[in-house]
Image (cartoon, rainbow, N blue to C red; front, side, top):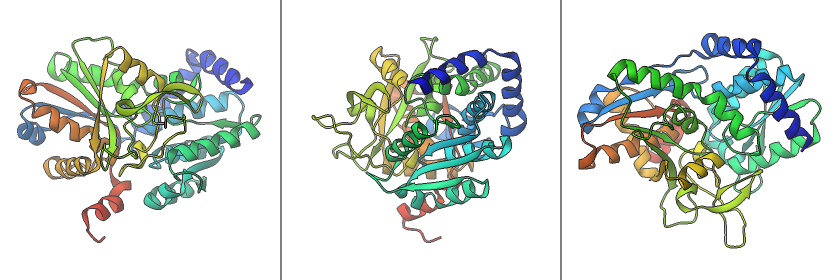
Amino acid sequence: MPAMEELRDAFYKYKDNEEFIEEFNTYLREFAGRPTGLYYAPNLSEKLGCKIYLKREDMLHTGAHKINNAIGQGLLAKYMGKTRLIAETGAGQHGIATAVIGARLGFDVKVYMGAKDVERQKLNVFRMELSGAEVMPVDKGAKTLKDSINEAFRDWVANLDTTHYLIGTTMGPHPYPTMVKYFQSVIGREARKQILEAEGKLPDTVIACVGGGSNAMGIFSGFVDDEDVDLIGVEAGGVSLDTDENGATLTNGTEGILHGSLSLVLQTDEGQIKDTSSVSAGLDYPGIGPEHAYLKSINRVEYVPILNDEALDAFKLLCETEGIIPALESSHAVAYAVKYAQMPENKGKTIIINLSGRGDKDMFTVAKELGVEV
C-alpha cells in the first residue's frame, strides 16, 4: 500500500504540472511520432460497404500504442527519483516501449515475459535486449501474460525504493487503470478531432481490440460521452468459445479480484484463475481493466469475441486490400468490423478501427498458422 500511495500522490501531483505535461507532449511528438494519422481505407471501405477509417497507432515508434503510456510513466518515474524500471509484456510491444524509454531516460530495465511468449515473439525479445533491457522468461503457470505480471509484482515489492513498475495496460490496483487511461487518452482526442475534420461529424462506431484494455480505453475516451457513437471492444475468443481456454473475459468472465482490482475474471467456480490461449499474445489475459467491466455493466460498450481463424482472415484481408500489416491484436478488431459491416442495418456507416499496432512481430506466428515456411 505505501508504494501505491506514493505512486498515486505523484501521479496526481504531476499530471497537471505544466513542466511535466510539456515534456510529455514533446516526447509524444518528437520521440514517438504523434499525431498518428486517421487513414481512410478506400479499398476495404468499398469491399465492406461502409466508410472505414484506421487510427494508425501502428505508425508510432516501436510499432504500437504502448509507447504513449511508457513515455508517461517513464517520465513520472524520473520525477519520482526512481532509477530502475520493470515491466511485464505479452506480445512484447510494451516491453519494447519500456526498454526504449528506459534507454532514453537512463534507467536500468528488466522485462518479465512468459516463456511461451518469449518463444513466439523472438524478434521483440531481441529488440528489447538491443535497447539494453534484461528479458526474464517466466516458466510458471501458463507461461503467458498473467504469469509475467505475477513475477513483476514480486520484483517490485522487493525493490520499492529504487524501482517503478511500469504496467502496460488499464489493469491492476489504483492508480494504474486511471493513469494508463490518462496517458493513452491522446488517441481518442486525436481521433475525435480528425474524424470531425474528415467527415464533419462524429463516427457511427468505434471498434478496438481488448486484452487488458489500454488501446481501447484510449480511443473510447474520446467518444464515451457521445451516446450516438457505438463503442465495441473485441476480445480473443481463442480456438473456440466452447473451450475453457480463451481470453473472452467480458463475454465469459465473472466478478473477481486479479492483480489488485475488482473486475471480470476468467475463473473456476472455486475462484482459481483459468489459463487462456489466443493466437495473439497481447490478448492472452484472463482479466480485464476494471473500467471496461464498468462500461459493460452500464451497457455503454458492447464487447464481442473473435476466434483465431477470424483474426487470421482479417490479417490477410487488410494486407491484401490496403497493404497494411496489422498486429494480430488489431486483427481481432478488423475481423469484427468485417462482421459488423455485413449486417444490413450497418451498411454505409462510418467506422473507426483503432489499429493498435503493426504486425512485424507476428510474421512467424502467422506463417506457422498458415502453414507457410519463412
